[in-house]
Length: 153
Image (cartoon, rainbow, N blue to C red):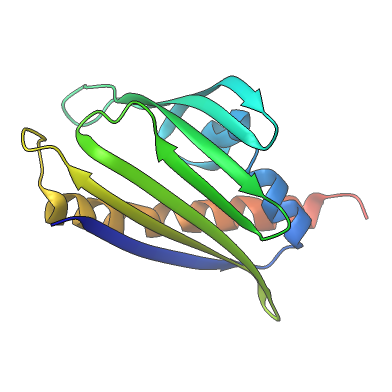
Protein backbone atom coordinates (compact mmCIF):
# COMPACT_ATOMS: atom_id res chain seq x y z
CA UNK A 1 0.00 0.00 0.00
CA UNK A 2 1.20 3.51 -0.78
CA UNK A 3 0.20 6.94 0.43
CA UNK A 4 -1.48 9.55 -1.73
CA UNK A 5 -2.66 13.05 -0.83
CA UNK A 6 -4.06 15.98 -2.78
CA UNK A 7 -4.39 19.53 -1.48
CA UNK A 8 -4.96 22.84 -3.22
CA UNK A 9 -5.60 26.51 -2.75
CA UNK A 10 -6.44 29.49 -4.95
CA UNK A 11 -4.21 32.53 -4.64
CA UNK A 12 -5.55 35.93 -5.72
CA UNK A 13 -2.35 37.07 -7.39
CA UNK A 14 -0.82 37.11 -10.87
CA UNK A 15 0.54 33.80 -12.17
CA UNK A 16 4.08 35.16 -12.59
CA UNK A 17 4.22 36.23 -8.95
CA UNK A 18 2.81 32.91 -7.68
CA UNK A 19 5.21 30.93 -9.89
CA UNK A 20 8.24 33.03 -8.98
CA UNK A 21 7.62 33.06 -5.22
CA UNK A 22 6.79 29.35 -4.92
CA UNK A 23 9.80 28.33 -6.99
CA UNK A 24 12.33 30.54 -5.19
CA UNK A 25 13.61 27.76 -2.95
CA UNK A 26 16.08 29.93 -1.04
CA UNK A 27 13.12 32.01 0.18
CA UNK A 28 11.03 29.03 1.33
CA UNK A 29 11.82 29.61 5.02
CA UNK A 30 9.96 32.94 4.62
CA UNK A 31 7.12 31.35 2.64
CA UNK A 32 6.55 28.16 4.67
CA UNK A 33 6.45 28.14 8.48
CA UNK A 34 7.91 24.63 8.80
CA UNK A 35 11.31 25.21 7.17
CA UNK A 36 14.21 26.66 9.13
CA UNK A 37 16.57 26.54 6.13
CA UNK A 38 16.57 25.84 2.40
CA UNK A 39 19.97 25.44 0.75
CA UNK A 40 20.33 25.05 -3.02
CA UNK A 41 23.03 22.45 -3.68
CA UNK A 42 23.02 22.50 -7.49
CA UNK A 43 21.15 23.76 -10.53
CA UNK A 44 21.01 22.07 -13.92
CA UNK A 45 18.68 23.90 -16.28
CA UNK A 46 15.20 23.78 -14.73
CA UNK A 47 16.23 21.16 -12.14
CA UNK A 48 17.29 22.24 -8.66
CA UNK A 49 18.75 19.96 -5.99
CA UNK A 50 18.38 21.37 -2.49
CA UNK A 51 18.44 20.57 1.23
CA UNK A 52 15.46 21.43 3.41
CA UNK A 53 15.80 21.62 7.18
CA UNK A 54 12.74 21.83 9.37
CA UNK A 55 12.36 23.58 12.70
CA UNK A 56 12.72 21.13 15.62
CA UNK A 57 9.65 18.96 16.18
CA UNK A 58 7.85 18.56 19.52
CA UNK A 59 10.59 16.14 20.62
CA UNK A 60 13.41 18.49 19.60
CA UNK A 61 14.35 16.41 16.53
CA UNK A 62 15.42 18.36 13.45
CA UNK A 63 14.43 16.67 10.19
CA UNK A 64 16.47 17.41 7.06
CA UNK A 65 16.61 15.89 3.58
CA UNK A 66 17.72 16.51 0.01
CA UNK A 67 15.13 16.88 -2.75
CA UNK A 68 15.19 17.54 -6.46
CA UNK A 69 12.65 19.70 -8.32
CA UNK A 70 12.17 20.16 -12.04
CA UNK A 71 10.02 23.11 -13.07
CA UNK A 72 8.20 23.24 -16.39
CA UNK A 73 6.98 26.82 -16.81
CA UNK A 74 5.26 26.05 -20.11
CA UNK A 75 3.17 23.23 -18.61
CA UNK A 76 2.79 25.05 -15.26
CA UNK A 77 4.01 22.01 -13.35
CA UNK A 78 6.84 21.15 -10.99
CA UNK A 79 7.87 17.58 -10.27
CA UNK A 80 9.81 16.91 -7.09
CA UNK A 81 11.24 13.87 -5.39
CA UNK A 82 13.23 13.21 -2.27
CA UNK A 83 16.80 12.15 -3.02
CA UNK A 84 17.54 11.47 0.65
CA UNK A 85 14.36 9.65 1.52
CA UNK A 86 14.71 9.40 5.31
CA UNK A 87 11.67 7.51 6.68
CA UNK A 88 10.14 7.29 3.17
CA UNK A 89 10.74 4.51 0.65
CA UNK A 90 9.96 7.29 -1.83
CA UNK A 91 8.24 10.68 -1.88
CA UNK A 92 7.14 12.32 -5.13
CA UNK A 93 5.30 15.62 -5.34
CA UNK A 94 3.57 17.21 -8.31
CA UNK A 95 2.76 20.92 -8.13
CA UNK A 96 0.21 22.11 -10.72
CA UNK A 97 -0.66 25.74 -11.34
CA UNK A 98 -3.82 26.85 -13.14
CA UNK A 99 -5.07 30.34 -13.87
CA UNK A 100 -8.71 30.76 -12.86
CA UNK A 101 -11.05 33.79 -12.71
CA UNK A 102 -10.33 33.95 -8.93
CA UNK A 103 -6.55 33.71 -9.20
CA UNK A 104 -4.03 30.89 -9.47
CA UNK A 105 -5.06 27.45 -8.28
CA UNK A 106 -2.05 25.64 -6.88
CA UNK A 107 -2.55 21.89 -6.46
CA UNK A 108 -0.17 19.52 -4.64
CA UNK A 109 -0.26 15.77 -5.25
CA UNK A 110 2.01 13.71 -3.00
CA UNK A 111 2.66 10.02 -3.65
CA UNK A 112 4.80 8.15 -1.15
CA UNK A 113 5.46 5.00 0.80
CA UNK A 114 6.88 4.79 4.30
CA UNK A 115 9.70 2.43 5.23
CA UNK A 116 8.69 -0.44 7.56
CA UNK A 117 10.69 1.08 10.44
CA UNK A 118 9.33 4.63 9.96
CA UNK A 119 7.65 6.27 12.96
CA UNK A 120 4.29 6.22 11.09
CA UNK A 121 2.74 4.09 8.35
CA UNK A 122 1.38 5.33 5.01
CA UNK A 123 -2.05 6.18 6.45
CA UNK A 124 -0.49 8.00 9.40
CA UNK A 125 1.74 10.07 7.11
CA UNK A 126 -1.23 10.86 4.84
CA UNK A 127 -3.05 12.20 7.92
CA UNK A 128 -0.04 14.34 8.86
CA UNK A 129 0.27 15.71 5.32
CA UNK A 130 -3.47 16.40 5.09
CA UNK A 131 -3.36 18.32 8.38
CA UNK A 132 -0.20 20.27 7.54
CA UNK A 133 -0.68 21.05 3.83
CA UNK A 134 -3.77 23.26 4.28
CA UNK A 135 -1.90 25.25 6.95
CA UNK A 136 1.13 25.75 4.71
CA UNK A 137 -1.01 26.49 1.64
CA UNK A 138 -2.93 29.17 3.56
CA UNK A 139 0.34 30.77 4.70
CA UNK A 140 1.69 30.72 1.15
CA UNK A 141 -1.55 32.23 -0.15
CA UNK A 142 -1.52 34.98 2.47
CA UNK A 143 2.15 35.83 1.91
CA UNK A 144 1.84 35.92 -1.87
CA UNK A 145 -1.38 37.95 -1.76
CA UNK A 146 0.35 40.39 0.60
CA UNK A 147 3.28 40.66 -1.81
CA UNK A 148 0.84 41.24 -4.68
CA UNK A 149 -0.74 44.22 -2.87
CA UNK A 150 2.62 45.79 -2.02
CA UNK A 151 4.35 45.17 -5.36
CA UNK A 152 5.00 48.28 -7.45
CA UNK A 153 2.62 48.67 -10.37
